[in-house]
Amino acid sequence: MGMSIQSNPDVSGSQSTSSTATWQQRKQDFQNLSQALQSGNVDQAKTAYAQLVKDSPASATKDPNGPLAQIGKSLQSGDIAGAQKAMSGMKSHHGGHRHSSSTSTSSSTPTLSNPTATLGNNVDTLA
Image (tube, rainbow, N blue to C red; front, side, top):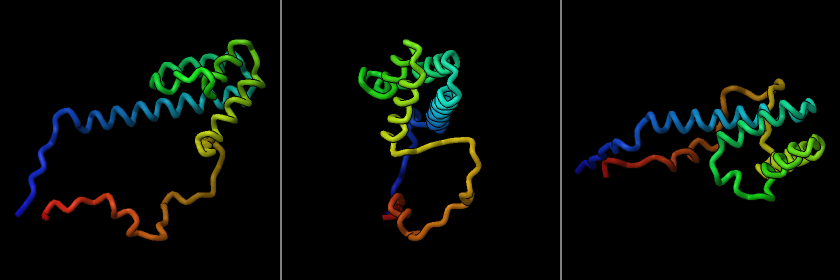
């Protein structure tokens, strides 16, 4: 006895592609902001911050005490050191994920120590 799976027209590949593109844009915005802050360029950082806020969901910007808001407040007052400190806090808040353009020694092919760990996402459609 087979199981029929119907595709939902509202959940299409284009929606997934759009979500990926949006995420990639925010990632690029974040990198631009990080680079502007590292270089100490307040005007460039303000522009990058404005773009990041524009491309981010409202939930990411609603906490007035959150790291993103602190970066904005610091930039608004011209406090590049305060913005850099808030950015550092933001990076550590997100598990220290740093996406930089520096060279890396990581392999382009991931190695799985337990290949069966990824099998939990499979669905048996023949049951």
